[in-house]
Amino acid sequence: MPTEHHSRVIVVGVDGSAGSLRAMRWAIDEAALRDCAIEAVTVWRTGSNGVGTRHAAEELQARVVQQACAGLADSPLVCEEIETGNPEEVLVTRSEHASLLVIGSHGVGSVRHAALGSTSEYCSRMAACPVVVLPMPADGGRHTQLAER
Image (cartoon, rainbow, N blue to C red; front, side, top):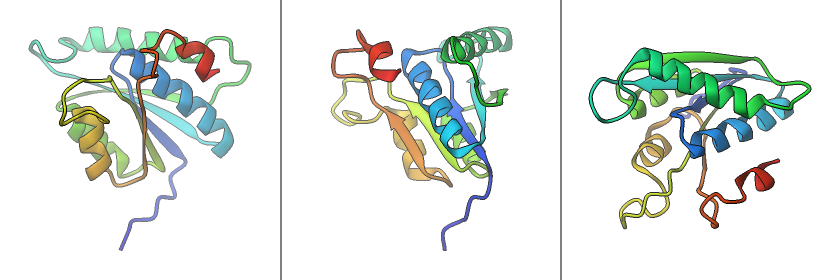
């Protein structure tokens, strides 16, 4: 039996990429329609894969949230959360209390991940709530801002 989600929270994966900025902007518009809050989640881990320090994670998250909310008269409540771990697992865990999980695609080029990147593919299969994956624009992102606003 599917789990019902009564939470009024949209979880957004924020990794500092153009895809996460698209996801954040989309989530802001959706949160206004649903009258709910946003939980921006950035995951950091030591090493060469991903963000290397908590401070760097905080900075990139703040930048994405600020850019996404720039110019808005009314923006929803945005809670900024930083976690250590594997991004896929953290986002799936966070989906357990969310009404929606929103992530951006990085537009990877492998055959296996032609439509979805590894994080979005994993979350689409394992999340406890509906998942929205915002694809890379067909023009490679040159006109992203025009298309999103």
